[in-house]
Picture (tube, rainbow, N blue to C red):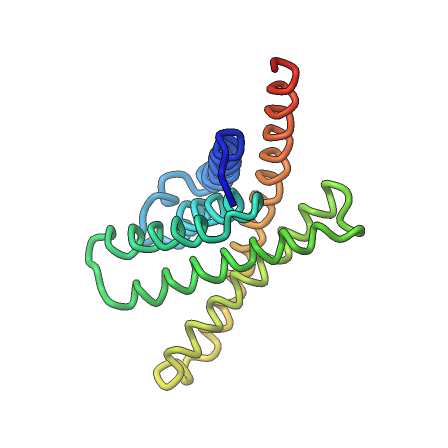
Length: 195
């Protein structure tokens, strides 16, 4: 599939708007801790970029390019934090892969007739990202099963916390996706009028 300049501009707009809405929304609530990789609100930054990349690429069916950009983002995430350890490869891998898959699945769901208005699409995004974010904890627990079986209550609390964080991420993602699509469509209409 050939990528033209209009498609590139639309993808950049979608990435900037979706990532920006998620990161700014997180910053308004959690302030500077959104940018500290050892704090749990860092998910608004890391997952915000992941959501932006995945949405921008998958929305226009640029799957290969999106996977390549997500791989680059994964490498940046795993190699940049201070106090680097091997667990980060698994942790960030789970987040990048599952969040990107949730965006792909979201785009498939919203093509159905029942998702014809903005409110329904935002609710779908909220629920899907919340459930995915909670499943990430389950996947991480399963990877460390022998060490984690004694702390089942702590793991359930982690899943519930990630469910709440995911609901916030999904809500912001839903708003960002709606805004990004509106801006991208407006850009294309203005471009047609000028031409």
